[in-house]
Length: 159
Image (cartoon, rainbow, N blue to C red; front, side, top):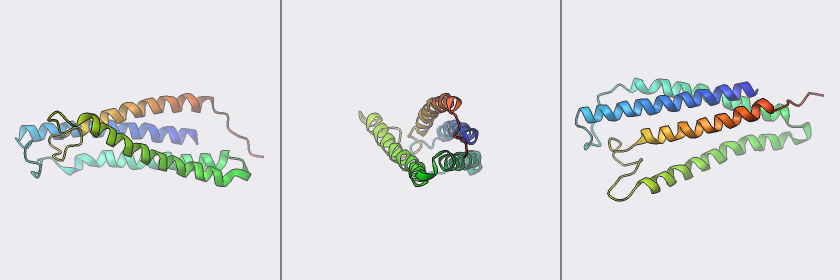
């Protein structure tokens, strides 16, 4: 169970790093073709460059979500099964909430003084690559903490 979750977290990290690299390539291509000040222009780059990150992200979700669901179902005492499901679903909700706060916080911190911020309306002037690298760093910290706690976890025996 814990191995599945760990595999999902690693694949998610790889997906984020890949997304950062591809976003940097997209920005460089926009600059190379003089499209930086044209937000509606199509950057001459195939959309297939995005496929690996979405495939990795999907596979990561499968490993992580199924692993978490199995963990909370199997390791919670029988009398508390509904609480285990609630905890599993709470993780998803809290993650979405924290993600929204993180995006708002970063936009507020990076916008101003004539700057558009990391999430500019013109994606050719935005810095989503910085955001992806920040997510990769946070994911690395989270993965490290996960590995630390997972290695010391003792599975509950079935009765």
